[in-house]
Length: 152
Image 1: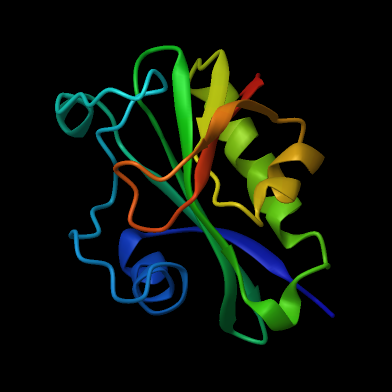
Image 2: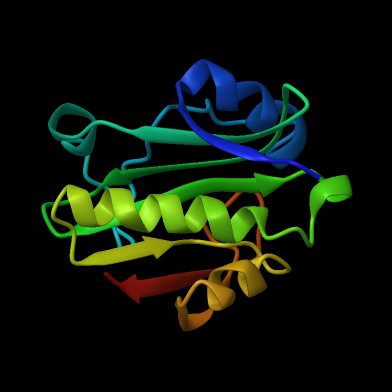
């Protein structure tokens, strides 16, 4: 199968997030999150940084997505990684995470972090992330989740 990774806009990933990754989500889906690596919330993230979005296309159809943004000058968050079930096992998550890591490096980040759901942590481990702490549900609509981090 032939796949192509592209830098896209929020409107491209939003339907995937709404309908596949977070169906029925109660909180609004925004282009970025105010969550920080230390599990606090910083509303200045929305003012200080810009998000990046990637999609993987197969036959002009979006089959995988991810996004990322700085949460401070040194930390870059991966958010919203999703691959359609029929396209899993093809290395698409790895491709998206590699693009994200290159982007994080380009904007000067020292660390990439994320909050994967149970069941998707293997994609991050394969990309060199380490799981940090314990699984948790508190404050998460789609858990359990765990923190994961990778130095850039």
